[in-house]
Amino acid sequence: MVMDGKKLEYKGEKALKELEKLTANAAEVQEEALKMILTQNKGTEYLNKYMAGVESKSQVPHFKRCVPVTTYKDVRPYIQRIANGDNSNLITSQPVTEMLCSSGTSAGEPKLMPSIEEDLDRRTFLYNLIMPIINQYVGGLDEGKAMFLYFVKAEMSTPCGLPARTVLTSFYKSQHFKNRSHDPYNDFTSPDQTILCYDSNQSMYCQLLAGLVFRHQVLRLGAVFASAFLRAISFLERNWRKLCQDIRTGKLDHAMITDAQCQSAMYSSVLLRPQPLVADEIQSICSSKSWKGIVRRLWPKAKYIEAVITGSMSQYIPSLEYYSDGKLPLVCTMYASSECYFGVNLKPFCKPADVSFTLLPNMGYFEFIPLGESATWSIDLDEEEEEEGVPPSKLVDLVHVRVGCYYELVVTTFAGLYRYRIGDVLQVTGFHNQAPQFRFICRRNVVLSVDNDKTNEEDLHKSITAAKKLLEPYNALLVEYTSCADASTVPGHYVIYWEIAYNNGLVDEAFAIDPTVLQECCVAVEERLDYTYRRCRTLDKSVGPLEIRIVEAGTFESLMDFFINQGASINQYKTPRCIKSKAALKLLNSNVKASYFSSRDPCWNP
Image 1 (cartoon, rainbow, N blue to C red):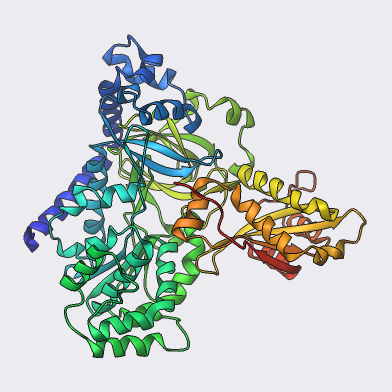
Image 2: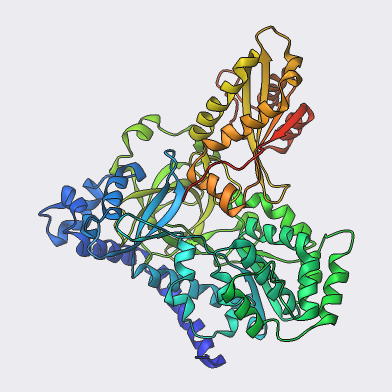
Protein backbone atom coordinates (compact mmCIF):
# COMPACT_ATOMS: atom_id res chain seq x y z
CA MET A 1 0.00 0.00 0.00
CA VAL A 2 1.37 3.41 -1.04
CA MET A 3 0.29 6.67 0.57
CA ASP A 4 -0.17 9.67 -1.73
CA GLY A 5 1.27 13.10 -0.94
CA LYS A 6 -1.96 14.67 0.30
CA LYS A 7 -2.63 11.84 2.75
CA LEU A 8 0.91 12.09 4.08
CA GLU A 9 0.64 15.86 4.46
CA TYR A 10 -2.62 15.46 6.36
CA LYS A 11 -1.06 12.71 8.49
CA GLY A 12 1.82 15.06 9.35
CA GLU A 13 -0.46 17.96 10.24
CA LYS A 14 -2.59 15.68 12.39
CA ALA A 15 0.50 14.41 14.25
CA LEU A 16 1.68 17.95 14.99
CA LYS A 17 -1.77 18.98 16.21
CA GLU A 18 -1.83 15.97 18.53
CA LEU A 19 1.60 16.95 19.82
CA GLU A 20 0.36 20.48 20.57
CA LYS A 21 -2.73 19.13 22.31
CA LEU A 22 -0.72 16.75 24.50
CA THR A 23 1.82 19.36 25.56
CA ALA A 24 -0.81 22.07 26.13
CA ASN A 25 -2.59 19.76 28.57
CA ALA A 26 0.43 17.97 30.01
CA ALA A 27 -0.80 18.02 33.63
CA GLU A 28 -4.18 16.49 32.75
CA VAL A 29 -2.63 13.94 30.36
CA GLN A 30 -0.18 12.85 33.06
CA GLU A 31 -2.97 12.49 35.63
CA GLU A 32 -5.01 10.39 33.19
CA ALA A 33 -2.00 8.23 32.31
CA LEU A 34 -1.38 7.44 35.98
CA LYS A 35 -5.07 6.74 36.61
CA MET A 36 -5.15 4.38 33.64
CA ILE A 37 -2.03 2.51 34.82
CA LEU A 38 -3.38 2.16 38.36
CA THR A 39 -6.88 1.14 37.22
CA GLN A 40 -5.54 -1.47 34.80
CA ASN A 41 -3.01 -2.92 37.23
CA LYS A 42 -4.72 -2.50 40.62
CA GLY A 43 -5.10 -6.26 41.06
CA THR A 44 -1.42 -7.04 40.60
CA GLU A 45 0.63 -8.57 43.38
CA TYR A 46 3.05 -5.63 43.43
CA LEU A 47 0.47 -2.82 43.71
CA ASN A 48 -1.59 -4.79 46.23
CA LYS A 49 1.34 -4.52 48.64
CA TYR A 50 0.79 -0.76 48.82
CA MET A 51 -2.71 -0.04 47.52
CA ALA A 52 -5.02 -2.90 48.52
CA GLY A 53 -8.52 -1.61 49.29
CA VAL A 54 -7.85 1.95 48.09
CA GLU A 55 -10.87 3.51 46.35
CA SER A 56 -10.54 4.68 42.76
CA LYS A 57 -10.88 8.37 43.64
CA SER A 58 -7.99 8.05 46.15
CA GLN A 59 -5.65 6.00 43.99
CA VAL A 60 -3.46 8.83 42.66
CA PRO A 61 -2.76 10.61 45.98
CA HIS A 62 -2.27 7.26 47.73
CA PHE A 63 0.17 6.14 45.03
CA LYS A 64 2.22 9.33 45.40
CA ARG A 65 2.25 8.97 49.16
CA CYS A 66 2.87 5.25 49.61
CA VAL A 67 4.42 3.53 46.59
CA PRO A 68 8.23 3.52 46.93
CA VAL A 69 10.86 4.64 44.46
CA THR A 70 12.53 1.54 42.97
CA THR A 71 15.67 0.37 41.26
CA TYR A 72 16.29 -2.79 39.25
CA LYS A 73 17.33 -4.60 42.43
CA ASP A 74 13.77 -4.08 43.76
CA VAL A 75 11.88 -5.24 40.65
CA ARG A 76 14.23 -8.01 39.54
CA PRO A 77 12.56 -10.76 41.66
CA TYR A 78 9.18 -10.07 39.99
CA ILE A 79 10.71 -9.96 36.51
CA GLN A 80 12.62 -13.19 37.11
CA ARG A 81 9.45 -14.94 38.25
CA ILE A 82 7.65 -13.89 35.06
CA ALA A 83 10.68 -14.93 32.98
CA ASN A 84 10.51 -18.33 34.69
CA GLY A 85 6.82 -18.80 33.87
CA ASP A 86 4.80 -17.04 36.59
CA ASN A 87 1.74 -15.05 35.54
CA SER A 88 2.27 -11.50 34.29
CA ASN A 89 -0.23 -10.23 36.86
CA LEU A 90 2.58 -10.04 39.36
CA ILE A 91 3.12 -6.52 37.99
CA THR A 92 0.69 -5.88 35.10
CA SER A 93 -2.83 -6.97 34.14
CA GLN A 94 -1.82 -7.42 30.49
CA PRO A 95 0.30 -10.33 29.25
CA VAL A 96 4.02 -9.63 29.09
CA THR A 97 4.83 -10.45 25.46
CA GLU A 98 8.61 -10.07 25.61
CA MET A 99 11.50 -8.96 27.77
CA LEU A 100 13.64 -6.09 26.54
CA CYS A 101 17.35 -6.30 27.30
CA SER A 102 18.76 -3.17 28.84
CA SER A 103 22.29 -2.42 30.07
CA GLY A 104 23.94 -5.14 32.14
CA THR A 105 23.99 -5.33 35.92
CA SER A 106 27.01 -5.64 38.20
CA ALA A 107 26.22 -9.35 38.47
CA GLY A 108 26.97 -9.65 34.76
CA GLU A 109 23.58 -10.45 33.22
CA PRO A 110 21.45 -8.06 31.14
CA LYS A 111 18.58 -6.25 32.81
CA LEU A 112 15.23 -7.53 31.55
CA MET A 113 12.42 -5.01 31.15
CA PRO A 114 8.81 -6.22 30.75
CA SER A 115 6.98 -5.17 27.60
CA ILE A 116 3.33 -5.55 26.62
CA GLU A 117 1.76 -5.55 23.17
CA GLU A 118 0.44 -1.97 23.32
CA ASP A 119 3.95 -0.65 24.03
CA LEU A 120 4.64 -1.02 20.30
CA ASP A 121 1.77 1.38 19.59
CA ARG A 122 3.36 3.98 21.85
CA ARG A 123 6.77 3.57 20.22
CA THR A 124 5.20 3.84 16.76
CA PHE A 125 3.33 6.99 17.86
CA LEU A 126 6.63 8.63 18.76
CA TYR A 127 8.38 7.48 15.56
CA ASN A 128 5.50 8.94 13.54
CA LEU A 129 6.18 12.39 15.00
CA ILE A 130 9.75 12.58 13.73
CA MET A 131 9.21 13.38 10.04
CA PRO A 132 6.43 15.96 10.58
CA ILE A 133 8.80 17.79 12.95
CA ILE A 134 11.75 17.62 10.54
CA ASN A 135 9.60 18.66 7.57
CA GLN A 136 9.06 22.01 9.29
CA TYR A 137 12.77 22.73 8.77
CA VAL A 138 13.73 20.88 5.56
CA GLY A 139 11.61 20.37 2.48
CA GLY A 140 11.68 17.81 -0.32
CA LEU A 141 12.63 14.79 1.78
CA ASP A 142 9.92 12.78 0.00
CA GLU A 143 11.85 13.13 -3.28
CA GLY A 144 14.70 10.78 -2.42
CA LYS A 145 15.90 8.03 -0.09
CA ALA A 146 17.18 7.67 3.45
CA MET A 147 20.36 5.68 4.07
CA PHE A 148 19.78 4.63 7.66
CA LEU A 149 21.98 1.81 8.91
CA TYR A 150 19.84 -0.27 11.25
CA PHE A 151 20.84 -3.57 12.86
CA VAL A 152 19.27 -6.33 14.94
CA LYS A 153 20.92 -8.43 17.62
CA ALA A 154 20.52 -12.13 18.23
CA GLU A 155 17.60 -12.98 20.51
CA MET A 156 17.56 -15.07 23.64
CA SER A 157 14.64 -16.76 25.35
CA THR A 158 13.66 -16.73 28.99
CA PRO A 159 13.13 -20.11 30.70
CA CYS A 160 9.39 -19.92 29.94
CA GLY A 161 9.97 -19.06 26.26
CA LEU A 162 9.45 -15.29 26.20
CA PRO A 163 11.67 -13.54 23.65
CA ALA A 164 14.45 -11.51 25.27
CA ARG A 165 15.86 -8.92 22.87
CA THR A 166 16.83 -5.28 22.55
CA VAL A 167 14.09 -2.70 22.09
CA LEU A 168 15.30 -1.89 18.57
CA THR A 169 15.39 -5.55 17.54
CA SER A 170 11.85 -5.83 18.90
CA PHE A 171 10.66 -2.91 16.78
CA TYR A 172 12.41 -3.96 13.54
CA LYS A 173 10.97 -7.50 13.85
CA SER A 174 7.47 -6.25 14.66
CA GLN A 175 4.57 -6.11 12.22
CA HIS A 176 4.54 -2.32 12.77
CA PHE A 177 7.86 -2.17 10.92
CA LYS A 178 7.71 -5.10 8.52
CA ASN A 179 4.16 -4.40 7.31
CA ARG A 180 4.41 -0.60 7.24
CA SER A 181 2.85 1.28 4.32
CA HIS A 182 5.23 2.67 1.72
CA ASP A 183 6.05 6.19 2.80
CA PRO A 184 8.16 8.40 0.48
CA TYR A 185 9.44 10.22 3.58
CA ASN A 186 10.82 6.93 4.88
CA ASP A 187 12.05 5.23 1.70
CA PHE A 188 15.13 3.38 2.95
CA THR A 189 18.03 2.33 0.74
CA SER A 190 18.43 -0.87 2.80
CA PRO A 191 16.07 -3.76 2.01
CA ASP A 192 14.37 -5.00 5.18
CA GLN A 193 16.04 -8.41 4.85
CA THR A 194 19.48 -6.80 5.21
CA ILE A 195 18.38 -4.94 8.35
CA LEU A 196 17.00 -8.16 9.84
CA CYS A 197 20.16 -10.19 9.16
CA TYR A 198 21.75 -11.29 12.45
CA ASP A 199 25.26 -11.33 10.96
CA SER A 200 26.35 -7.73 11.49
CA ASN A 201 29.14 -7.91 8.88
CA GLN A 202 26.82 -9.19 6.15
CA SER A 203 24.17 -6.67 7.19
CA MET A 204 26.66 -3.79 7.14
CA TYR A 205 28.09 -4.85 3.77
CA CYS A 206 24.68 -5.08 2.10
CA GLN A 207 23.38 -1.85 3.60
CA LEU A 208 26.46 0.11 2.54
CA LEU A 209 26.32 -1.47 -0.91
CA ALA A 210 22.69 -0.34 -1.28
CA GLY A 211 23.57 3.14 -0.03
CA LEU A 212 26.33 3.45 -2.61
CA VAL A 213 24.18 2.19 -5.48
CA PHE A 214 21.54 4.81 -4.64
CA ARG A 215 24.10 7.49 -3.65
CA HIS A 216 22.62 10.21 -5.88
CA GLN A 217 19.14 9.65 -4.41
CA VAL A 218 20.18 9.74 -0.74
CA LEU A 219 18.85 12.85 1.02
CA ARG A 220 19.62 11.86 4.61
CA LEU A 221 22.01 9.54 6.36
CA GLY A 222 22.28 8.04 9.79
CA ALA A 223 22.25 5.26 12.33
CA VAL A 224 20.70 4.95 15.76
CA PHE A 225 23.94 5.89 17.53
CA ALA A 226 26.80 8.07 16.32
CA SER A 227 29.22 5.24 17.13
CA ALA A 228 27.39 2.91 14.72
CA PHE A 229 27.60 5.44 11.88
CA LEU A 230 31.35 5.80 12.42
CA ARG A 231 31.76 2.02 12.46
CA ALA A 232 30.10 2.03 9.04
CA ILE A 233 32.65 4.57 7.75
CA SER A 234 35.47 2.41 9.11
CA PHE A 235 33.92 -0.69 7.48
CA LEU A 236 33.65 1.21 4.19
CA GLU A 237 37.30 2.22 4.43
CA ARG A 238 38.29 -1.45 4.67
CA ASN A 239 35.86 -2.82 2.07
CA TRP A 240 35.22 -0.16 -0.58
CA ARG A 241 37.20 -2.07 -3.23
CA LYS A 242 34.98 -5.15 -2.83
CA LEU A 243 31.86 -2.99 -2.84
CA CYS A 244 33.00 -1.26 -6.05
CA GLN A 245 33.61 -4.63 -7.66
CA ASP A 246 30.07 -5.77 -6.81
CA ILE A 247 28.61 -2.58 -8.29
CA ARG A 248 30.82 -2.87 -11.38
CA THR A 249 29.76 -6.46 -12.13
CA GLY A 250 26.23 -6.34 -10.74
CA LYS A 251 27.06 -9.42 -8.67
CA LEU A 252 27.49 -9.93 -4.94
CA ASP A 253 30.71 -11.19 -3.44
CA HIS A 254 29.31 -14.56 -2.36
CA ALA A 255 32.29 -15.22 -0.15
CA MET A 256 31.22 -12.14 1.79
CA ILE A 257 27.42 -12.57 1.62
CA THR A 258 26.19 -16.09 2.35
CA ASP A 259 22.78 -15.21 3.83
CA ALA A 260 20.16 -16.35 1.30
CA GLN A 261 17.61 -13.66 2.19
CA CYS A 262 20.22 -10.91 1.87
CA GLN A 263 21.27 -12.30 -1.51
CA SER A 264 17.70 -12.46 -2.77
CA ALA A 265 16.83 -8.95 -1.55
CA MET A 266 19.95 -7.38 -3.01
CA TYR A 267 19.47 -8.97 -6.44
CA SER A 268 15.78 -8.08 -6.59
CA SER A 269 16.01 -4.42 -5.55
CA VAL A 270 19.63 -3.15 -5.57
CA LEU A 271 21.99 -4.99 -7.92
CA LEU A 272 19.70 -4.94 -10.95
CA ARG A 273 22.51 -4.58 -13.53
CA PRO A 274 26.26 -3.89 -13.80
CA GLN A 275 27.05 -0.20 -13.16
CA PRO A 276 30.73 0.35 -14.06
CA LEU A 277 30.43 4.15 -14.22
CA VAL A 278 28.97 4.32 -10.70
CA ALA A 279 31.77 2.03 -9.48
CA ASP A 280 34.39 4.30 -11.14
CA GLU A 281 32.94 7.38 -9.38
CA ILE A 282 33.02 5.67 -5.98
CA GLN A 283 36.52 4.29 -6.57
CA SER A 284 37.82 7.75 -7.47
CA ILE A 285 36.35 9.24 -4.28
CA CYS A 286 37.42 6.45 -1.92
CA SER A 287 40.98 6.23 -3.26
CA SER A 288 41.73 9.85 -2.36
CA LYS A 289 44.45 10.35 0.28
CA SER A 290 42.21 12.15 2.76
CA TRP A 291 38.78 10.98 3.83
CA LYS A 292 37.87 14.36 5.24
CA GLY A 293 34.43 15.20 3.87
CA ILE A 294 34.02 11.69 2.39
CA VAL A 295 30.35 11.54 3.41
CA ARG A 296 29.48 14.66 1.42
CA ARG A 297 31.44 13.45 -1.60
CA LEU A 298 29.84 10.01 -1.65
CA TRP A 299 26.32 11.28 -0.93
CA PRO A 300 26.31 14.80 -2.41
CA LYS A 301 22.57 15.44 -1.98
CA ALA A 302 22.44 14.49 1.71
CA LYS A 303 20.95 17.23 3.88
CA TYR A 304 21.82 15.95 7.35
CA ILE A 305 23.13 13.06 9.46
CA GLU A 306 20.73 11.61 12.03
CA ALA A 307 22.01 9.81 15.14
CA VAL A 308 22.05 9.98 18.91
CA ILE A 309 24.80 12.50 19.73
CA THR A 310 23.97 13.27 23.36
CA GLY A 311 25.59 11.89 26.52
CA SER A 312 28.49 9.54 25.84
CA MET A 313 27.80 9.76 22.09
CA SER A 314 28.87 13.44 22.10
CA GLN A 315 32.50 12.24 22.05
CA TYR A 316 31.96 11.24 18.39
CA ILE A 317 30.82 14.67 17.18
CA PRO A 318 34.33 15.76 16.03
CA SER A 319 34.69 12.59 13.93
CA LEU A 320 31.24 13.06 12.37
CA GLU A 321 32.16 16.65 11.54
CA TYR A 322 35.47 15.52 10.04
CA TYR A 323 33.87 12.98 7.71
CA SER A 324 31.13 15.43 6.70
CA ASP A 325 33.56 18.36 6.43
CA GLY A 326 31.49 20.15 9.08
CA LYS A 327 28.82 20.99 6.51
CA LEU A 328 26.07 18.50 7.33
CA PRO A 329 23.85 19.22 10.33
CA LEU A 330 23.92 16.54 13.03
CA VAL A 331 20.33 15.78 13.97
CA CYS A 332 19.24 14.07 17.18
CA THR A 333 15.50 13.39 17.04
CA MET A 334 14.31 11.47 20.10
CA TYR A 335 14.93 10.32 23.66
CA ALA A 336 14.12 6.71 24.52
CA SER A 337 15.22 3.68 26.51
CA SER A 338 14.31 0.02 26.92
CA GLU A 339 12.06 0.93 29.85
CA CYS A 340 10.05 3.63 28.05
CA TYR A 341 10.09 6.01 25.09
CA PHE A 342 10.17 9.54 26.49
CA GLY A 343 10.14 12.44 24.05
CA VAL A 344 11.23 14.25 20.90
CA ASN A 345 13.50 17.12 19.89
CA LEU A 346 11.28 19.90 18.55
CA LYS A 347 14.32 21.78 17.19
CA PRO A 348 16.21 18.96 15.48
CA PHE A 349 18.59 21.30 13.60
CA CYS A 350 19.92 23.01 16.71
CA LYS A 351 23.60 22.75 17.62
CA PRO A 352 24.52 19.42 19.28
CA ALA A 353 25.22 21.19 22.59
CA ASP A 354 21.70 22.66 22.57
CA VAL A 355 19.73 19.43 22.01
CA SER A 356 16.69 19.28 24.31
CA PHE A 357 13.85 16.80 24.39
CA THR A 358 10.20 17.58 25.07
CA LEU A 359 8.76 14.77 27.19
CA LEU A 360 5.45 13.46 25.86
CA PRO A 361 2.99 13.12 28.75
CA ASN A 362 1.10 10.15 27.25
CA MET A 363 4.10 7.80 27.12
CA GLY A 364 4.12 6.97 30.83
CA TYR A 365 3.94 8.75 34.17
CA PHE A 366 7.04 10.83 34.86
CA GLU A 367 8.46 12.07 38.15
CA PHE A 368 11.81 13.54 39.07
CA ILE A 369 14.33 13.38 41.91
CA PRO A 370 15.74 16.90 42.44
CA LEU A 371 19.54 16.99 42.27
CA GLY A 372 20.17 20.70 42.62
CA GLU A 373 20.42 23.94 40.72
CA SER A 374 24.02 23.78 39.58
CA ALA A 375 26.32 21.41 37.76
CA THR A 376 27.85 20.43 41.13
CA TRP A 377 24.93 18.03 41.67
CA SER A 378 27.31 15.08 41.37
CA ILE A 379 28.98 15.84 44.72
CA ASP A 380 25.77 16.87 46.46
CA LEU A 381 24.04 13.48 46.40
CA ASP A 382 22.58 12.28 49.67
CA GLU A 383 24.50 9.08 50.46
CA GLU A 384 21.78 7.91 52.84
CA GLU A 385 19.21 8.18 50.05
CA GLU A 386 21.48 6.14 47.81
CA GLU A 387 21.49 3.37 50.43
CA GLU A 388 18.00 3.63 51.91
CA GLY A 389 16.03 4.85 48.90
CA VAL A 390 14.50 8.17 47.90
CA PRO A 391 11.46 9.25 49.98
CA PRO A 392 8.33 9.38 47.76
CA SER A 393 7.59 12.86 49.11
CA LYS A 394 10.76 14.17 47.47
CA LEU A 395 9.60 13.46 43.90
CA VAL A 396 8.49 16.33 41.64
CA ASP A 397 5.75 15.96 38.99
CA LEU A 398 6.45 16.56 35.30
CA VAL A 399 4.88 20.01 35.07
CA HIS A 400 6.42 21.27 38.34
CA VAL A 401 10.11 20.98 37.46
CA ARG A 402 12.07 24.25 37.35
CA VAL A 403 14.13 25.66 34.49
CA GLY A 404 17.87 25.31 35.04
CA CYS A 405 17.57 22.61 37.69
CA TYR A 406 18.97 19.08 37.50
CA TYR A 407 16.85 15.98 38.07
CA GLU A 408 17.01 12.20 37.89
CA LEU A 409 14.17 10.70 35.84
CA VAL A 410 11.69 8.29 37.49
CA VAL A 411 9.04 6.51 35.41
CA THR A 412 5.87 4.50 35.94
CA THR A 413 4.96 2.44 32.87
CA PHE A 414 1.91 0.62 31.55
CA ALA A 415 4.00 -2.59 31.48
CA GLY A 416 4.52 -2.79 35.24
CA LEU A 417 7.42 -0.60 36.36
CA TYR A 418 6.40 1.67 39.26
CA ARG A 419 8.42 4.74 40.22
CA TYR A 420 11.44 3.17 38.58
CA ARG A 421 14.72 5.10 38.54
CA ILE A 422 15.91 5.23 34.94
CA GLY A 423 19.29 6.56 36.05
CA ASP A 424 19.40 9.47 33.60
CA VAL A 425 20.37 12.94 34.83
CA LEU A 426 18.53 15.72 32.99
CA GLN A 427 18.55 19.51 33.12
CA VAL A 428 15.41 21.53 32.42
CA THR A 429 16.06 23.98 29.58
CA GLY A 430 12.53 25.35 29.08
CA PHE A 431 8.93 24.42 28.36
CA HIS A 432 6.87 23.76 25.25
CA ASN A 433 3.38 24.70 26.36
CA GLN A 434 3.03 22.84 29.69
CA ALA A 435 5.57 20.13 28.87
CA PRO A 436 9.14 20.62 30.10
CA GLN A 437 12.15 20.28 27.83
CA PHE A 438 15.27 18.53 29.09
CA ARG A 439 18.91 18.35 28.14
CA PHE A 440 20.42 14.92 28.68
CA ILE A 441 23.43 15.30 30.98
CA CYS A 442 24.63 11.77 31.70
CA ARG A 443 23.82 8.39 33.19
CA ARG A 444 24.06 8.26 36.98
CA ASN A 445 27.12 6.36 38.18
CA VAL A 446 28.38 5.65 34.64
CA VAL A 447 32.05 6.52 34.18
CA LEU A 448 32.83 4.86 30.85
CA SER A 449 30.76 4.31 27.71
CA VAL A 450 31.70 3.82 24.06
CA ASP A 451 28.62 2.23 22.50
CA ASN A 452 25.77 0.45 24.33
CA ASP A 453 28.12 -0.36 27.19
CA LYS A 454 27.72 1.56 30.46
CA THR A 455 30.42 0.88 33.02
CA ASN A 456 29.98 2.32 36.51
CA GLU A 457 32.68 3.16 39.02
CA GLU A 458 31.98 0.11 41.17
CA ASP A 459 32.37 -2.33 38.26
CA LEU A 460 35.52 -0.58 37.09
CA HIS A 461 37.02 -0.74 40.57
CA LYS A 462 36.22 -4.45 40.95
CA SER A 463 37.81 -5.17 37.58
CA ILE A 464 40.97 -3.21 38.39
CA THR A 465 41.19 -4.90 41.81
CA ALA A 466 41.14 -8.33 40.16
CA ALA A 467 43.61 -7.39 37.44
CA LYS A 468 46.23 -5.80 39.68
CA LYS A 469 46.73 -9.14 41.48
CA LEU A 470 48.66 -10.25 38.39
CA LEU A 471 51.36 -7.70 39.33
CA GLU A 472 52.04 -9.23 42.76
CA PRO A 473 54.54 -11.91 41.62
CA TYR A 474 56.70 -9.05 40.29
CA ASN A 475 56.70 -7.16 43.63
CA ALA A 476 54.76 -4.46 41.82
CA LEU A 477 51.88 -2.44 43.19
CA LEU A 478 49.26 -0.37 41.48
CA VAL A 479 49.69 3.12 42.97
CA GLU A 480 46.72 4.79 41.31
CA TYR A 481 44.53 4.57 38.25
CA THR A 482 42.04 6.49 36.15
CA SER A 483 40.41 5.97 32.77
CA CYS A 484 38.88 7.52 29.68
CA ALA A 485 36.82 6.44 26.69
CA ASP A 486 38.94 6.91 23.56
CA ALA A 487 36.77 7.79 20.58
CA SER A 488 39.72 8.56 18.29
CA THR A 489 39.78 4.91 17.20
CA VAL A 490 36.97 3.06 15.43
CA PRO A 491 35.55 1.30 17.24
CA GLY A 492 36.23 3.30 20.38
CA HIS A 493 37.84 1.62 23.37
CA TYR A 494 38.52 1.98 27.08
CA VAL A 495 41.88 3.36 28.19
CA ILE A 496 43.09 2.71 31.76
CA TYR A 497 46.03 4.74 33.10
CA TRP A 498 48.16 2.86 35.64
CA GLU A 499 50.97 4.16 37.80
CA ILE A 500 53.03 1.22 39.08
CA ALA A 501 55.57 1.16 41.91
CA TYR A 502 57.83 -1.60 43.15
CA ASN A 503 58.40 -2.87 46.67
CA ASN A 504 62.13 -2.33 46.15
CA GLY A 505 61.47 1.31 45.21
CA LEU A 506 62.79 1.03 41.64
CA VAL A 507 59.73 2.45 39.91
CA ASP A 508 61.35 2.47 36.47
CA GLU A 509 61.26 -1.31 36.42
CA ALA A 510 57.74 -1.18 34.94
CA PHE A 511 59.40 -2.26 31.73
CA ALA A 512 60.76 -5.34 33.53
CA ILE A 513 57.30 -6.87 33.69
CA ASP A 514 56.78 -9.18 30.76
CA PRO A 515 54.48 -7.46 28.22
CA THR A 516 52.27 -10.55 28.11
CA VAL A 517 51.50 -10.05 31.82
CA LEU A 518 50.22 -6.52 31.20
CA GLN A 519 48.24 -7.77 28.21
CA GLU A 520 46.69 -10.33 30.55
CA CYS A 521 45.92 -7.49 32.97
CA CYS A 522 43.89 -5.91 30.14
CA VAL A 523 42.03 -9.17 29.62
CA ALA A 524 41.46 -9.55 33.38
CA VAL A 525 39.81 -6.12 33.52
CA GLU A 526 37.55 -6.96 30.59
CA GLU A 527 36.58 -10.38 31.96
CA ARG A 528 35.05 -8.71 35.02
CA LEU A 529 33.19 -5.94 33.26
CA ASP A 530 29.48 -6.47 32.75
CA TYR A 531 27.48 -8.52 30.27
CA THR A 532 26.79 -5.66 27.85
CA TYR A 533 30.42 -4.58 27.63
CA ARG A 534 31.54 -8.14 26.94
CA ARG A 535 28.83 -8.57 24.30
CA CYS A 536 29.90 -5.31 22.60
CA ARG A 537 33.50 -6.54 22.57
CA THR A 538 32.89 -10.14 21.57
CA LEU A 539 29.75 -10.33 19.45
CA ASP A 540 28.99 -6.82 18.21
CA LYS A 541 32.62 -5.70 17.82
CA SER A 542 31.37 -2.21 18.64
CA VAL A 543 34.01 -1.70 21.35
CA GLY A 544 37.72 -2.21 20.69
CA PRO A 545 40.29 -4.03 22.88
CA LEU A 546 40.90 -2.39 26.26
CA GLU A 547 44.23 -0.55 26.62
CA ILE A 548 46.36 -0.02 29.73
CA ARG A 549 48.81 2.90 29.55
CA ILE A 550 51.64 2.85 32.08
CA VAL A 551 52.55 6.36 33.25
CA GLU A 552 55.68 7.79 34.87
CA ALA A 553 56.04 7.86 38.65
CA GLY A 554 54.49 11.00 40.11
CA THR A 555 52.00 11.46 37.28
CA PHE A 556 48.99 11.23 39.59
CA GLU A 557 50.49 13.83 41.93
CA SER A 558 50.78 16.12 38.92
CA LEU A 559 47.17 15.32 38.07
CA MET A 560 46.10 16.31 41.58
CA ASP A 561 48.04 19.56 41.27
CA PHE A 562 46.31 20.23 37.98
CA PHE A 563 42.81 19.85 39.45
CA ILE A 564 43.68 21.86 42.57
CA ASN A 565 44.90 24.68 40.32
CA GLN A 566 41.54 24.42 38.55
CA GLY A 567 39.73 25.06 41.87
CA ALA A 568 39.38 21.62 43.49
CA SER A 569 39.78 21.43 47.27
CA ILE A 570 42.95 19.68 48.43
CA ASN A 571 41.03 18.41 51.48
CA GLN A 572 38.30 16.78 49.40
CA TYR A 573 40.31 15.75 46.35
CA LYS A 574 39.87 12.18 45.13
CA THR A 575 41.39 10.91 41.91
CA PRO A 576 38.62 10.97 39.28
CA ARG A 577 38.00 7.47 37.96
CA CYS A 578 37.21 8.85 34.53
CA ILE A 579 38.89 11.86 32.91
CA LYS A 580 37.12 14.00 30.32
CA SER A 581 39.16 17.21 30.55
CA LYS A 582 41.32 17.57 27.43
CA ALA A 583 44.02 19.33 29.42
CA ALA A 584 44.09 16.57 32.06
CA LEU A 585 44.25 13.88 29.35
CA LYS A 586 47.10 15.77 27.70
CA LEU A 587 48.96 15.69 31.03
CA LEU A 588 48.38 11.94 31.41
CA ASN A 589 49.32 11.11 27.83
CA SER A 590 52.52 13.17 28.02
CA ASN A 591 53.66 10.85 30.82
CA VAL A 592 52.85 7.52 29.16
CA LYS A 593 55.91 5.29 28.81
CA ALA A 594 54.27 2.09 27.56
CA SER A 595 50.86 0.83 26.47
CA TYR A 596 49.31 -2.64 26.20
CA PHE A 597 46.11 -4.02 24.68
CA SER A 598 43.93 -7.04 25.41
CA SER A 599 45.29 -9.95 23.42
CA ARG A 600 41.91 -11.67 23.09
CA ASP A 601 38.19 -11.12 23.49
CA PRO A 602 36.65 -11.58 26.94
CA CYS A 603 34.37 -14.55 27.53
CA TRP A 604 30.71 -13.91 26.73
CA ASN A 605 27.76 -16.28 26.63
CA PRO A 606 24.25 -15.24 25.51
